Amino acid sequence: MLEKIDHLGIAVKDLKAAIARYAALTGAPPQHVEEVPSQQVKVAMFQVGESRVELLAATSPDSAIARFLDKRGEGMHHVCFKVSNLAGALAFLQQDGMEILPGAGGAGAEGSRVAFLHPRSAAGVLIELVEKPENHGALA
Image (cartoon, rainbow, N blue to C red; front, side, top):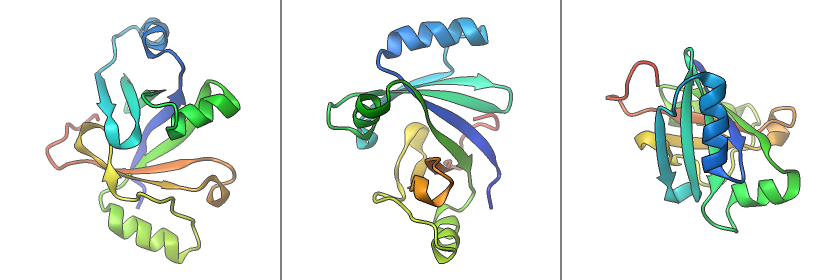
């Protein structure tokens, strides 16, 4: 069901400064930068081998990322797993007692569909599941 780790999400206060830090760290500029209105974030994706690092900055003071930053500060926000059938994965996980957060199947970056599992369901870790559009590149 889980195909691979798609990306690690890192919440940042200043996206421009974080992009500069991660460009130096990875030796390359971000592969993709996009605002995702449905999630109230702006993201920058850095390719690292087969997976990616996603920097997330709030675009609204009442967004989930803004609340996270206010409560915990910058740092690891979530682990994202790629799935080929989001609806099927969610049905299976829900039957197994996993708590799915509201908004499952909503729009994500790069035309994807995403859903989140409550951290209570995964040893305190926020889990994102992503289903990519069929025409999406092999590495992304």
